[in-house]
Amino acid sequence: MFRVILYTQWKWSRIVVALGVLVAFALPILSVQGAGVTDPTRWDATRLLRSIETWSVWYATFALGIGLLVATTAWAQDHRGRHVYALSLPIPRWEYTLLRFAAGAVLLAAPVVALWIGALLATSLAQIPPGLHAYPNALALRFALAALVAYAVFFAVSAGTTRTAGYVLAVVGALFAAEVLLSAAGVGGSVIEGAFDRLVNWPGPLEIFTGRWMLIDV
Amino acid sequence: MFDRLLHAVTCGAAVVVLLAGPVQRSRLEAQDAAPYRARVDTLAALLQEAREAAARAESSRVAGVQIDSIVTGSLVILTTPAERARIEAASRRAWNQLTVLLRQDTESVGQLTFYLVKAGSREPRPLGADTIPTVVYSEKSDAVDIADRIIWRLEEETALGLDTVTFEWLGRRLPLRPSSPGELSRIYVDLATRPARVVRECYLGNLGRCEEALLVWTADDPVIEWYDAAERRDLVAQLWVPASQSSDQRRRACLDLGSDDACVEMLQRHWAYGLPPPLSVDAQRSLTALALELGGEGALGRFLDTAAADPGDRLTASSGLTLDSLVAAWHSSVLAARPPQTTIARRLGWTAFFWVLVLTFIASRSTRWRRA
Image (cartoon, rainbow over all chains, first blue to last red):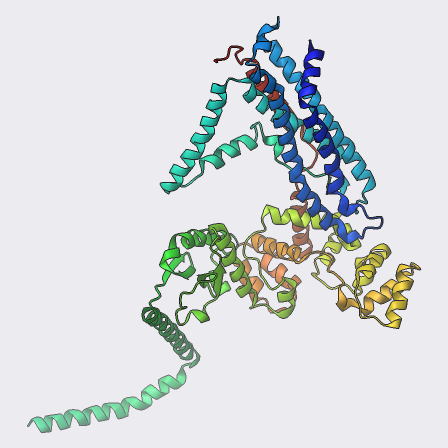
């Protein structure tokens, strides 16, 4: 059963996954282009760090994007067929959902591995100035966890009914409305900022997206 | 009768004045004139301030410029009423940050009155505002940015009271608030990555070399003592000097033939063309901020009032510590500010995994039945 679901999911999302692999492989290599010269001057360390920092934001963004795309394509055909296929299968709903989730997670492994290989290649080609170290494994692990969390978030939203998605949207809208009202009333504090802080700080689900996404660091 | 009485009183008064004159003169001669001179000077200064304030008020009235003064602690900010709310928040923020190092020592920094003006503002400037340090901010500046600008200006003004060596050593700005974690973190990166032997040895805990890297005292020959041969070669490769036959020969000997003597000679001759200091000036400023912090009450006054034209003496006077102890404290604070590790903490990994499980469980609870 899992192989069939994995195969169908691969067919639906192969373009997304293939593009993801390409981007994941290229990102680390592009990020160290400043360190690629054969005889770098030792004064390049700070400049290189700044360049790596600039690129680091793209890893998090990419993890979020690939998680979103793989999750939505996993459920797109079910939504289009009004979930009749799922009803026709002789397995309970929870099992079907877990199979879908697992298939998506397996597909997500491809960009993760591509990023890992790209990071290893990039750090082996780059001339790293003294005082700096390469962290290809840590970066790949962080990317894997972040992509998985993003995938799980969007998978959970996509698995729900339209009403569930409406509730999620309503909560987001309510936060924005509260922000506008509080701001108009001149009350200090920000609702969105508070909610965001809860999400990105421990034990929030998006904490993995914060921190240093550095391929090369001190 | 009345005339006679008036005459008698006048004569009596004249006798009293004649008799009292020598007595009074002898009393004046017995006293020191300096305190009287000081009082007169103070009164003259107050009169001058009052005249300037009156002139400002009058010019504002004539020009139709309304000026609000915002007083926060000893900080006085002059601004237009329309900007009051924003500037007031900034002023409070600035003062809160300043009091950490200034404490009760506000007299040491002297001028604490600033005129805040928005960039591009066409409102006429009130007369007298030219004598007050001006802080320019932009339309987009928030309270945090404006507070930073006020402090920056005050730091510049305060540094003017220093000797030339210390003034330049501090980058023309005396820190008046403790270094932020972000600033210390950047200094850590500097310390870990600067390609200078003296900085590497400082990073590894050689405090004498830290003092040298911080330029607290001057090395006899920085070219030799700060850098190793490879670093000198890198420096020469980046060095720009006016072309001449001798400099071209030396450059070739240094870069192509690997002659360290030629590199040393090149750097020593052309020092002024770009031998970079081992650490950035931010490191020096962070050391000074730490000295003022550790020195407690009156630290700023001691830093400014010390007669010695030497940053080291000022630092020891203000902190009340030996230079070695102060630099050791600085070294510890910088190492403690190491940026968060790139490697993933186990807690972070488990938290992410936990949320994946929670979200998968939520997804599995979704209903199979859909409305048309």
